[in-house]
Amino acid sequence: MQFQTPLLRGTLIQRYKRFLADVRLESGEVITATCPNTGSMMGLTTPGVPVWVSISDSPTRKYKHTWEMLEVNLGKGPSLVGINTNHPNALVSEAILGKRVASLKGYESLRREVKYGTNSRIDILLESPGKPPAYVEVKNVHMMREAGIAEFPDSVTARGLKHLLELSQMVREGHRAVMVFLIQRNDATRLTFARDIDPNYAGGLAEALEVGVEAIALKCALTPEGISVEKTVPIKV
Image 1 (cartoon, rainbow, N blue to C red):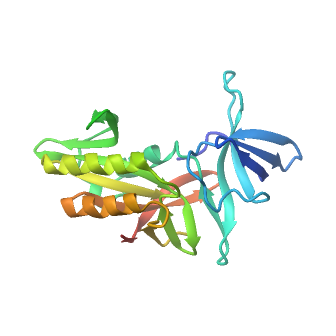
Image 2 (cartoon, helix red, strand yellow):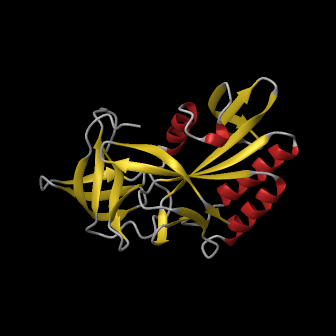
Image 3 (cartoon, rainbow, N blue to C red):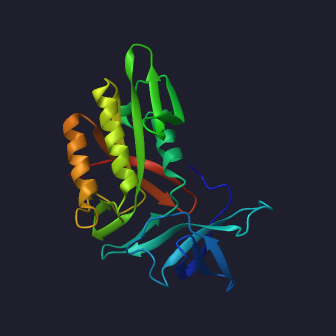
């Protein structure tokens, strides 16, 4: 996924009201950007961190800038972190269609946002004649408290637990169900789960895996020009 226009570099002043961030651009201009992330963004909102924002020419937008990524350093060099949670479904779809996710190859069609379960929509539905459909749920990951180890979730996620229960039901009905954790960080080497933040989700995932739900962690490569899925990394449940 390439950004349609070059990102603008700046410095974070503050994130507030969850969906807003004030940024001082390199030009000196102070702007308010939309923050497309509903999570806590633990460890990522320290004033003064370098950030990159995109700009939209839509006349209907109240804030024309969108916060896309930031730079962190956990002692092993600087790393970019993507915080825009609107990107993961498109990034995973792009990787599947490009045959860059080995365990999700071999399907003839890919559809997004398909209704299933109880008033839910599956992020990606993969289908081919003669084989069970694959229900693929995508979660964005950007938290890291120990160098190299990405963690999910960064806040309590009742919605995420609901998705695990619905994926488990798909397996019971004879379908394939896959949780894809998309890590928008250059510095991740593996993924684990934050039991101290949401023990119910961690426990629910373990139960889902026992039922037959699969889990894949995909690490992204990020630059100010674009983001793409780079490789699969190990998961420690």
